[in-house]
Image (cartoon, rainbow, N blue to C red; front, side, top):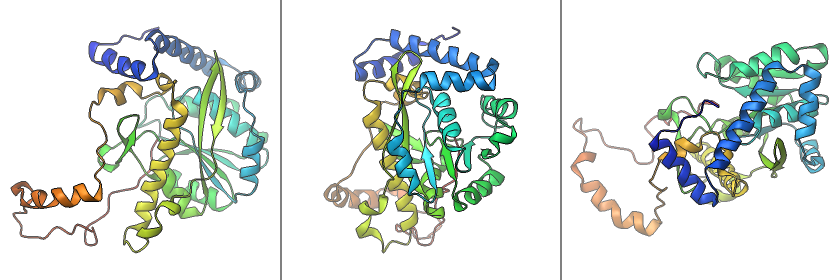
Amino acid sequence: MGLTLGETDRQAVMRACARDNTCIGRYYHWYFEKMLVARRLKNATRSSLIELTKAADASDLHHLDQVLSVCSSAVLALPHFGHYMLAALSIVTRYATERDIGLFYGDPKTHRGNEVFDEVHASRFSTREDARIHVLHANRAGMVEAIRLLRAGGLLLMMPDVHQNADETYLVPFLDRTLDVMLGSASLARKTGSALIPILAIPTGALRFELQFAGPIDAATRMASANSSSHYDEMLDYTATSMLFEQYEQWMVGHILLWQYVREHFLREASFIVFSPQALEQNWPAFLADPRNHSDSGIAIDLLGEHTSAPSTGVSI
C-alpha cells in the first residue's frame, strides 16, 4: 500500500488505537479502503461515480432537507473524516438540483493533493446540468465568490480541520489535545447570515457511510454575557468553531482512526489547558512579575486587545 510508519508515527497511531480500544490493523484496513476510493475517483465516469456514491451513502437526509429548507443559506462544515470525498459528492449532487452549491478548498498550488477535486469537477461535473456546482479555492478570489454565493442563498461546503499557516490559527480542545484551527467556516457563516451546520461521514461498513448532521450552531447562546467586548465577533467565531469540534468529537468516538490527521494530532502529548476564573486570578500576579513579559520598548500591553491587531481569521482547508 505504500504506507510505512516510523516509530514516532506508530506510537501516535497506537495512542489513537488505545483511545478507540482497537488495534492498529484497523488503521491499515482503513488506509487500504481510502486507496481504493481514490483510484476510483481518478478513473470513474460521471455516472459510475454517482452510482458509487449512492451505493456507499446509507444516509437518511430528510431531516437535513427540512433544516436547509428554512435556511436562507448555509455553510456545511465537513471535515476530512471517513469517506469525506464521497460524502461531499453526495451532498453536492443532491442539492445542486435546487440551489447553487460551492465546494471550498485549498488551491492545489499550495495544497498538494487537492488537484483531484479540480480534475473530478472539470472532467465529470462541468456539464450544463451541473451549472449550479461551483469550485472555489481558498484564496482572495475564492473568498469573494463564497460570500457572493452565500448572500445569494447558496450552500457552501467547507472542511474546517486544516490550515496552511499555523500562525493564523486558534487552539481548540479536541480529542484530549489541542488542535490548530482556522475560524473561516464560522466567520463566513456569521458575515453572510448563514447557518453553520456540522456534518460527518460515519462508517457503517466497508465502503459504506452515513452522514451525521446537527442543527445550526448558535454560538451567541454561549456568549450572552460577552456582547460588550470590542472583539465580540471574533469571540463568536471562536466559540462556534469550538462547538463544531465538540460535536465532531462526540460523533468520532470509536472511529478516530478514520480522521485524516490522526497521526499529526496524536503526536501531541500535551492536553488542552483550561483555566477557571479562580485559577487565572491566582496565577495572574506571577505572570505579570515574570521578566519575560516585560517590554523593552516601554509600550504597555493592552490585555483587552483594543489597540492591537486581532489575529487573522482567514480560511483554508
